[in-house]
Amino acid sequence: MNYAVAALNIDHDPAAYSALYEALDEPAADALLDERERAVRSAVRAVVAHDVAPRAAAADRDHLFVHDSYRALAEAGLAGLIFPQRLSGTGDTNVAYAAAVEEIATGCAATSLVYMTQMHAAYPIMTAGSAELTERYVPRLVNGSLYGSLAITEPNAGSDVAGLRTVASPQPSGYLLNGSKTFITTGDRADVIVCFATVDRRMGRHGITAFVLDAAWRGLSTGKPFAKLGMHGSSTAELFFDDVTVPANHLLGEVGDGWRIVMDSVIKSRISAAAQGVGIARAAYARTLVAVNRLHADRLPDEVTSALATLRGQILQSRLLLYAVARRVDSEGAPATGEISIMKQTCTDLGFRVARDAMRILGPYGDLAELGVERYLRDAKVTQIYDGTNEVQRMLIGRDTAQRTGRLR
Image 1 (cartoon, rainbow, N blue to C red):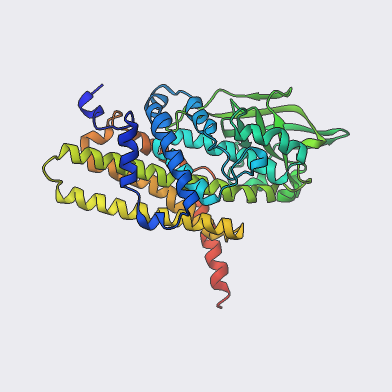
Image 2: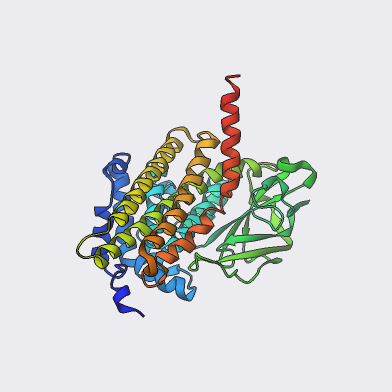
């Protein structure tokens, strides 16, 4: 280890870590948070400083699943923010949730991925499942006693949900599931899986149906976790369904409701990805700021000051966008697709761009694992891909623009 470089990293000093991010909080962004939302952010930041950030580098280096980091958040009662108290949640806003994911991603992006995947699995069960399914699974996903996965993507159907090939064949007592899923976060560790399949490929989106599966059921198996560029502290795997019997009472909603459930769920998942992008950008910026101030003890070069000023402005702009759109979700439930897409694309592109520019500012230090900026660059890349690639987001933004301007013709 290069101890001179390691000394520039404050991950193992909780007091210094918290003080740094408090100093970098922006009044303009804070003004969009109410008192409770700021309290949630502070509580998450404290757990991250003590129990998440200190483990992040080792989890990345050794590909260690971030179980202990996630458990620290769950045990602090911070893993069920958008769920009601009757389901072991805290009934907080989407804005509070966005601020929480942002803070977790700042300390460890992989932990934020596990954290948000738990929410992504629990949310459709709560909104579309029976009371029995909701009470059986959601509290245990929220408190971290179960791991969950959301199984949508297939080898030949990523963003094209209507093209799913996993088939749910009706049976007298339920359904028989056959097919496969890929790139499933926490897929190899999941205890419960929300799986989307079609009852008839000819029906397109109208045949998409959602089910809740116990991972221990016969015929359900997982592949070896993928080797990945980043997010090494989380796992991503394939799932295989070979005549998996699904009882009728494990259906979410009605037959054909899967498309609606997906569209409802992606609003939450894109808030999650956007918050990750902002958190990653903040982490890369903060680490670079600390490093260059210690490396240039006398005076920062003008070009460094200018580059850092640009990054600060870009981060604030995206942070404001994240909170504003999340607030719209709180007030309206489902804002225009274009707004959600702009938020997701802008904030995740920000994470990658800021990490890249931070490495350039740091010069030879930017490539060193001890400093951690290169980890954030690697972690940022996948946020541009999952929850709808940013190319798809631009397409959706374009469609939304065409619809809006079409009214003027």
